[in-house]
Image (cartoon, rainbow, N blue to C red; front, top):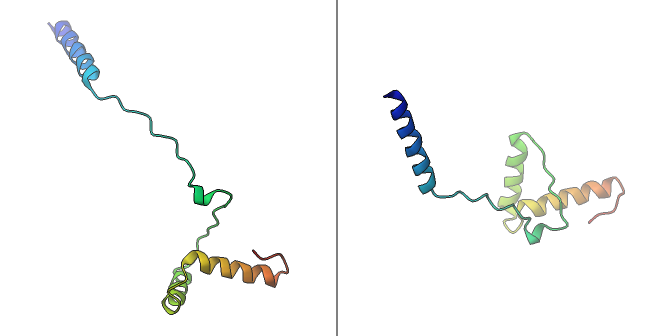
Length: 85
């Protein structure tokens, strides 16, 4: 009797699997065209850095974080006498 129940269970599972929707593999992530030829730079800093950046943005709302980072890096490049971008 247990053998018959096991066979019924297996048959039910096969039937359910046949009816289940097929899951497609996720499409491979493609890089955004606006990021081609660019690289991501990041770091972990104390929260005070973030607060200071937000204070600058409050005084200069037209500047986003990326432009502030760009400006800061160019200042660093100039300090060390390497080409600025």
